[in-house]
Amino acid sequence: MDAQDAAITVEQATGHFAAEVAYWREVRGMSKKALAELMGFHPSYVSHMESGRHKPTEDFARRADETLNAGKAIWHRWGEYESARARQTTAAAAVPPARGPEQPYAAGSAIVVAHDAARLDYDGRAYRLTMRRLLRNTGTAPITRYLIRISVDCYPGDPERSNAHYRQHPLTWDELALTATCRGEAMRWEAKHDRDAFKEVWLLFDNDQGRFPLYPGDSVWIEYAYTVSDTKWGRWFQRAVRLPTEHLEVALAFPAALDPVVWGTETSMTAEASPLPSAPARREENGMRLFTWSTARPALHARYRLEWRFRARPEPNVNQGEFK
Image (cartoon, rainbow, N blue to C red; front, top):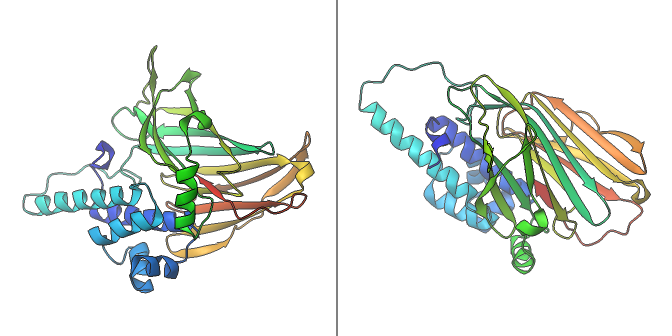
């Protein structure tokens, strides 16, 4: 169990587990019915699990993680739930201690994202992802690291084909060329999970020259970037809101000569995918076509997906990728 999980309640852990399952099902492009059939469950059971009406079970977590090739992300949420349940059982047998005000976030972390700006640039062969986030520490202890995810999937809805593709063409650290900075300082990073199509990384608030933790009450911009070829990324870009976020914006830049068009969907824990409430704005800029979209105070665990196609380029086989 990660130290950040220590304050999570059973209710919060149940919500995290439900959101994790829904997130990976969306990434793989599966309906609830399709996932249920692959896992050997009734479709209504998957629906109840994603809504939080059913409590997480070990069997469901194991099967979901394997079926969705989630790199143990769903299994980790099961462990988080079990730890929270054990703490609740222990606490119920003792006199409840005095409690301070609950943190104003569901993730148990002291981080609030005041501004989240992501940009994707495509040069015709590879995508360069650049993320800038204004982090605020609303807790009582210094923050020394920040978790990011990189996940790709060439064939949503066909896990076997996708797994085979990434076994043959795994996503590598060398090609990602991940960089991260904070206040002009380079940030060290450590891999938490390293799978063929999925990476989780801790960005550390330190480097060889010193430490620069984010102290309670302070805010700081961090920026990180990486590259993925279009044979491993694809034509959609999904964001999952995992921490309280005050403003979210996305920019996509494509060569205008490709004649790109963009559309998007929004998914929450209580509703299936629906069109974005407003269309992405569009403008031409130095031979590039730039699409931008933003929203204020997105709901926790909401997912926003932008998709595109190039009308001036023949459509290849379905080849899609995803980022968080």
